[in-house]
Length: 69
Image 1 (cartoon, rainbow, N blue to C red):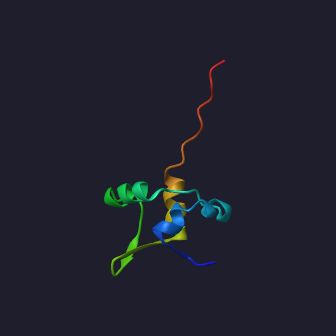
Image 2: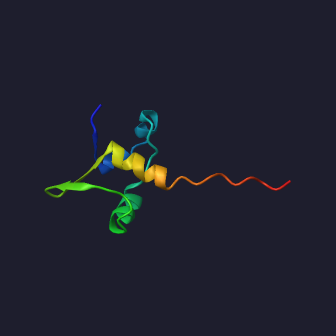
């Protein structure tokens, strides 16, 4: 498995089987512009490392709210 992930790979539903949630390309653009997710560029192509995506997910996991009875 490659450690490099492209935005299109991250937006595909097939990633869920690899343990990563699907993140739409528009959302990725917003996260990059607000500097919430780490990325690198090779030429004009954006590339993520799997560990960078996992770090972002760990920082932004929110606990589920319990419903009041």
